[in-house]
Image 1 (cartoon, rainbow, N blue to C red):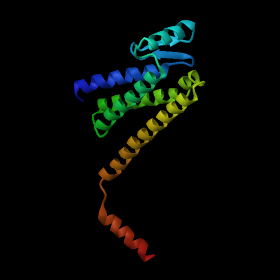
Image 2 (image 1 turned 90 degrees about the vertical axis):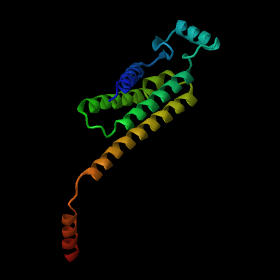
Image 3 (image 1 turned 180 degrees about the vertical axis):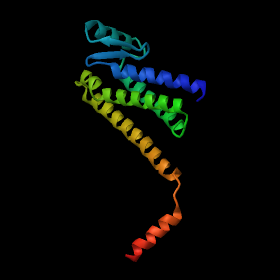
Length: 167
């Protein structure tokens, strides 16, 4: 694994773990990666900063951040999907695990925080389903590739086919 990719993956894991750690009624400033507890101070601060044009405080910023994290994670997972180096496999498994935890938190704690905004909740659920589909796609692709790369003795297949046909 190239050092630059290693740094990217560690950064992705860190941010995904942060998303996974958000509790119900907590919000995140995407710009500073600061988790904010629910309260009047947080509400006023987020509203004021959002109105002043500061990025990182809105629901849409959270959604875009998570979507970008998942896209970058899948890019790395696909890039190193067939890598056989044990250290690379371990870090890629950690990346996938962190992505799954963040995805699960979209439909639990983060969903609970924004439950009054049904349109946003549906958007989060759709993103979670999209992430799940892509994870399954990577896992299924790995399984198919392992089947295709395994050696198969065609003479045995032919002999077994003949014996079955004779019965």
